[in-house]
Length: 99
Image (cartoon, rainbow, N blue to C red):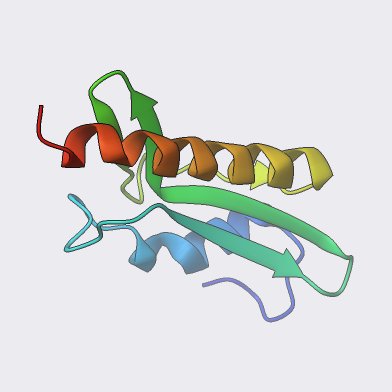
């Protein structure tokens, strides 16, 4: 069990593990989990439902607690997250429109 107020990202991962379930359990949109330590102004993130833009349209890659990986959260990471979600939304109409 993580200690209260821990700044260890490993402890954060243990706390967030219950959010990750195989197959997404009814999740149909990109989902990113953010963990922030206010003690040292540091954050991490992990994809629960990672958006993928592919030629056929938009897909979601689901993570489980065993394969979820926390990444450092900084300005570059935020830009990459927003860009990835925007690309997913741009790709979504390709699979929703009749051919």
